[in-house]
Image 1: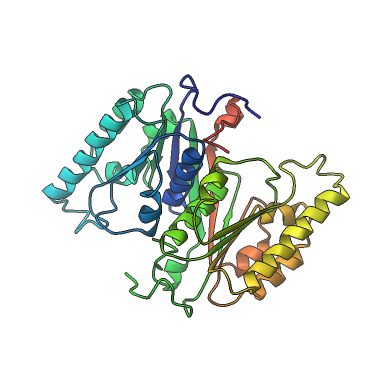
Image 2: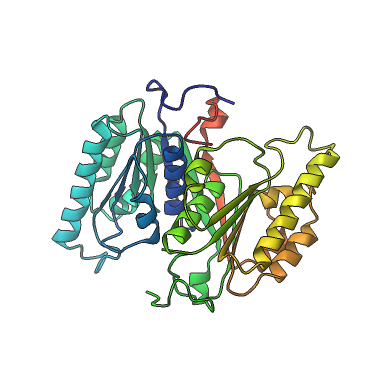
Length: 182
Length: 182
């Protein structure tokens, strides 16, 4: 077991990716946030595709110290084949805020939720995500979630987990349930 | 989007399984816990294989209302080929406490962390896990985590996600880091 200090500024932060079509990507990032907060780390979460929806976890996280959350984008695109300027604008804002947070020195963990989707749908340039990873300060941990993770991002990441759907109740006609899926 | 009340006692609780060799199983269960608490649901978490180690997330979760946590077992078995009586005893206690919590009517979500490992290593009988699932009250949500999920458990579950390791820093010789992996 590592004995290093949890606040050791020289601790090397890794790049983690949670991708795949299964459940648990955002959820795992929230769990990682909780764990980090529990050790006194400072966390920034940028939500790229969650819109203004009031998720249950927000209300809890918002009460905790050392966390900042920022919401951008829309939960569902009107039409992925015809992306609207405001959808692109929101994603660009999310990326810009994420970059600023990452470089600010104010956070130990940066979670960028659904950034892979935003990149996969070309709301933001995949190259800009790659630049973000390249510019990551060494002590900052970066977690990127969402399906469609770019191959280059996967290549650059230290830790990649694919959440694979083996069974999913949505496919059985059961709708998303408040408090459980969102 | 479902409009049902989050406290609706008639809400059907599902059985969720997070398994596989990748990272994010326990972490996803913690995220699910956070989400449930955010909606005012009551949560029980039974840790089967975490020992007395003081995880960062505990300290945060312990401060929140509507959650009860119970730790059993050992983080690592001395020798999986020669399981000790106290290792079996701890797992049986964990299962018994889980059963009691599930049937108590006091919780909306029951998380059984690493129960699949305990069952896979035969610390508890796989049949007892199946009985547990069969006896689940309809409104209770049940999350079972850990690799080696039993085939029968997967068959009975409503939602199964396999966390597949694409890349993992442990395999690159980087030790587990406090605040991030535990």
